[in-house]
Image (cartoon, rainbow, N blue to C red; front, side, top):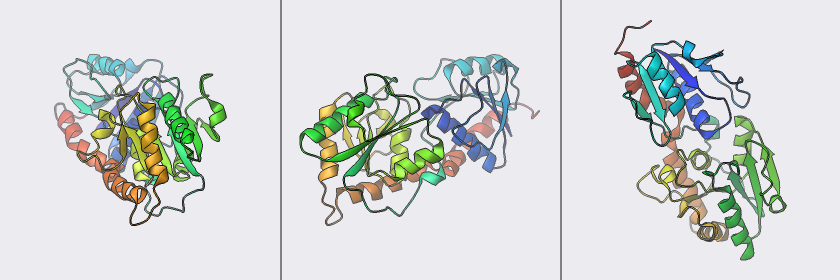
Length: 303
């Protein structure tokens, strides 16, 4: 099967991470995979697929055209209405083509079973661009401020795809990392003790929380579909409503104050989180999606 993915851009977004991870997993399963984009080459992640940089996405060909956004879905449908697929992040575009709802896909390097000794003070990580309204980064800052107001000592670590906005309270941050590669981001996650995932309800995929779970890092997350769909039993993280920094701060305090005795809260979250994260391994995600792609490819002769 020959798959051709259409990409609007190659920015280090959660959407693109999941798309590239899926493509790599299909390459590992013996498929021919091509990434076609009008944007710059990917610098933040290795890719096992063939890449073509073009002036117009409408020149793309392949047995199955895989759209990664509403805009590329329109192009794929116009080019090949009988063998186009839309990967859905959030609400799908209303086109008569098969749609695959995407879940997080976490690179194998993020997974670990051995957890090093916790830091003192504990390192609390918030990932996301403050310029993105769905990231909820300001609520993450609010949660940290609430915890500190109630005498919790912590180091705040920030990761963003680009420079911070002027509104970010950088005086509250001990480390700020910008434009990390996937390998560098993994190292930062592994260096932290708690992850706050403050996404708002409009967010399509909870990749940051999924990565933290895979790394065995306790998570404080918003109670939104992108997080709660991980598992019906919501015991793998502590949850707070989105747009509620105070409640999120209270959950953060619960994690920070856990004394670790008798299989404490943090250890339970680590153990359960790693169990939940197994579904996000690339090989599992590819195995689950392959029949869907094969059914689409079967609708036409192979080129």
